[in-house]
Length: 434
Image (tube, rainbow, N blue to C red; front, side):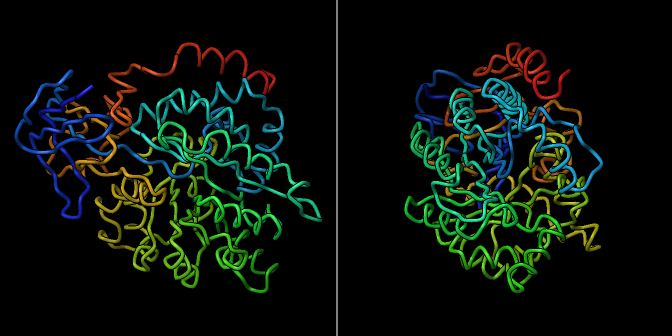
């Protein structure tokens, strides 16, 4: 179904930071066919008039836990480890597949409506999450965040090794790799050395990305150094071969050090910045300008809504930009373009996906911002409007791989009313006894 966008301000996300006013963008076969100032030849089954709104690459949410919508606002006001052990883990023990599906659908709706076309999910009951993603029409990298607390590791003794293998066999490569499976570890403090080595080997043997929580809190970072002879989580994981696959991405990286950044640049480990979650939990401020200067790719993530409390990546984009400027007392510490790139191209690079820019041949992962939104008028600079003024609610259309999955408040792939009923009437009572 050939589709033509017209009368849009196209933010191409190319090296020249091109913004093309009154642009035409043609889509065919799931990919971008042409971009230009003149209407392309040929006929189109649908012409979408952007009414002067911004057309940009879809956002890539590089770290989230989709079903945790159920815990939105639950246990607020506690440090990470208190919050996890005394609030989150006890609730998670009550999950079943039906509740996971309902809460995953709720999370996917929230992300789709706020402009996400690709996400990475680290959670449990991942086969069910995979089906929700498949039905929703978004792209996703899925992993189960493996943990092992036993004394003697073996793949047979670790249920998450089986979960990793089953997830890979079930969903990796689905729908022309719209769904991909990553190898994963929850974190250093939840994984013994045997599991770290097994996960690294699984990634190498199957050519998979690796997804890990890294140095989120000072406590986590320093206790790792105490356990492993001064090695930081990045350095310890490197010794275990965790970063030896094609590419990896490390969530948070708040307390990483210069020696870590050198390893990350060398081993193609992306730092996934989660500014809102890190601030809310009091974890600290990641050294993003230093990571970028060291040659580390940086992407953005919202984390789960239980620690954010939304998946509006526009909010994280704004906080990411202004936070560094304030902390470093430098209005150019992180620019609007830097923030927008982290939310688009940075995420695409992290996952090795052919998206994140508007160019012929790229997947047609596109979002349209409302040209009549009061907070986006006037538009002196498109990147500044995206980074500093836009909200997720300004998204009026979401297209993933050439298919419109959300338009003008209507979800085209998820039953909104059914999902809300399931969350309110089944999932919340199951988890919280309400």
